[in-house]
Image (cartoon, rainbow, N blue to C red; front, side, top):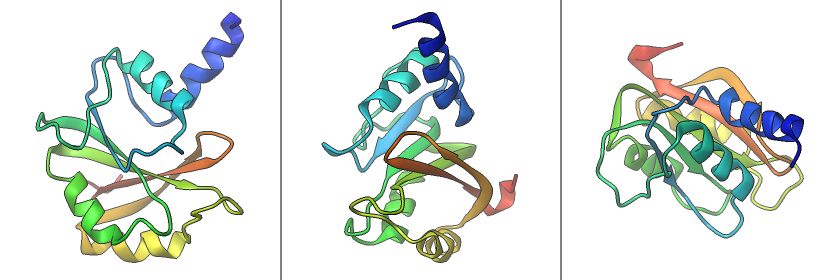
Length: 141
């Protein structure tokens, strides 16, 4: 991999606001996740992504979510269990036209019930996934 390619990959993970030393917890892991993005996040933060079972306080959560994954409000509530105050949740959903595509309105409806606010910050993080940033209602930003 060239230096330019490596820098471009780092930029994708840094679009999510992660930095060296951050602890990131992952929910919704399955065989369809973007493994390159996961590796980029681990490289950028210099630590492994924590699993759903880990109980450490984390700086951010990534939640892979697909249309048929169940109750989004429940998943968002679960993702807040170990999230540090002021932390953020990045919901990664399949892009339009991909299997499991989630309507943006679904996030808009579920977030407030879970005590979260959908920000205008979103990022195309791979060919198949889009990330949407959610924050606590009291930490809008």
